[in-house]
Length: 113
Length: 112
Image 1 (cartoon, chains in turn cyan, blue):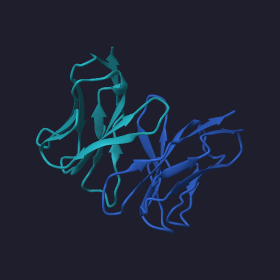
Image 2: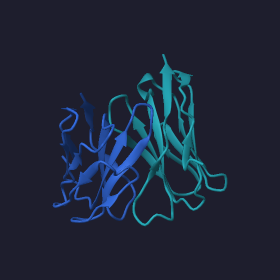
Image 3: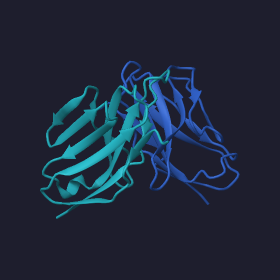
């Protein structure tokens, strides 16, 4: 079983809609969860992180964490064409001895004008 | 401005040659990492270093070597033993006590 899974996409949404990106993880003891955005040919940039169950909002972005169900999601409200990118979910399992973060394969998002 | 720099941006290598990718950070981060990304795939950890003069193998260390003689610098050498080195190489760093990793702009290596 892969440690961090994401739908590869592509996920297409119309401009102005809500984009919902999902991520599941296998280590129930995981403590830290991150969302990165990666434009084609560029390096990943951190969007937000979440540690506690529930929602965390930052502008148009909302991260949702449900540890019981072992999933974390990212909602993008009022999607813009500039949001078109690959979104990487990253999880820090509890049992590693250092700051190792496991990255998912990413979901490609396309926002259609 | 604080940040992570990688050089060169593009690198071409002939088969059988060793090449070294540079990574420098001025964020005063203790931990540094090297990842490899292949088209359509996620990030795979090559090597990481928590402190100066110490580093550990990641998931795909074969054919690679690193050094960490200075806190700011974590160069990666791709040796001739790496069978399929063509990829996008990403360097990242983080504070030792926090989990958030920040990435450099990357180096795209192509073997001719």
